[in-house]
Each structure stands twice: as structure tokens, then as C-alpha cells.
Image (cartoon, rainbow, N blue to C red):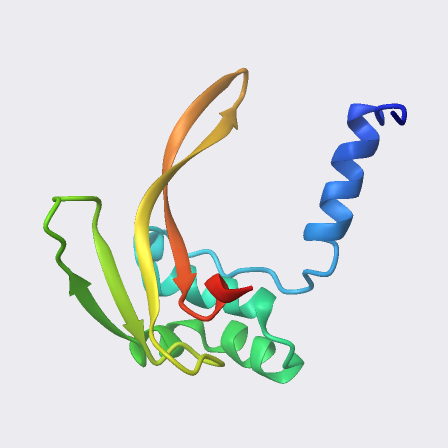
Length: 126
């Protein structure tokens, strides 16, 4: 077996391979923190290969949010809130957003914060 990399090396590698190519700062809007449309747009700014589209979304974030239709999805099991989002830029079919929670550091503590899991049906195939 190979030698285990140092934690700092591993963190740097993970950042470089997962976040290093992100060039676009997500617009911060306290009023949109709980809006799944904002989560989908933030993801698309990073995921789209179209540089011009990413800049366009960033430059007119609120207008792009207003163009996305949000349709509630009701399940039989009473799970967390779920929505289908139609009209997300650079997608060919609706995107599902499901409320979830993420553990994040808050000083010396680890806390749960609500977050939106954005799921595109075509992404599941890969």
C-alpha cells in the first residue's frame, strides 16, 4: 500500500480538483438563502461550460431567479420539502431540489445548516 498523504496535502488536492476552477463568486442575498432557485443558479454558474452564461447569471442573478418556475412535489412519505425547478439556464429538463442538512464548522463546534440538494435527472446516469 502507498503512504497516506498528509491531511494538508489531501485538503489542498481536494480543493484544487473540486473548487480550483470556480471563477465566479456567488451573489450573496440573505433574502434568497432558503430559495432552491438560488441554489440551482449558484450551481449552474460553476457547472456551465459557457463562460458568458455564468457571467450573465452573476450579473443579473435576481432576474434569472424570477424566470425559474418552482413547483412543489408532494410525496407519500412526508419527507423533506422538494421542488421541481423549470427554466434553470443551460438545462434541458426540470431540476429537482430537496431540502437537506450539511454539517459545517462554526468556530470549534460542528453545526447542522439547512441546504438545498440540487438533482438533475441526467446527472444520475453518469
